[in-house]
Length: 70
Image 1: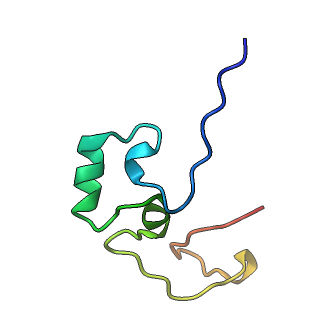
Image 2 (image 1 turned 180 degrees about the vertical axis):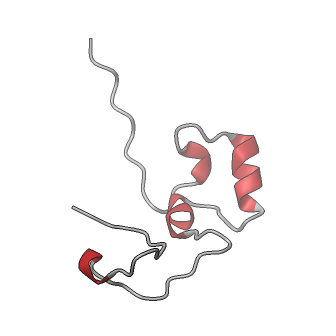
C-alpha cells in the first residue's frame, strides 16, 4: 500500500502547514518572526557565526568546525 502523496508546499506557505507544525507551534514561531516555510529555512541560531570557509585539509588541530560534504 502506498501512502497518499503530500501536497507540494512553496516557500511562501505558512509554517502551520508543514508536517508536525500546528497552530500552537506556528504561533510560537511567529514570535520569532518566522511566518513562512522560507522564513524557517533562513532562520539562523541566535549564536550563529560564520567566519570563514576552509577545506578539511586546512583545518587546524583542535579547531571546532562544521563540515559540509557531498
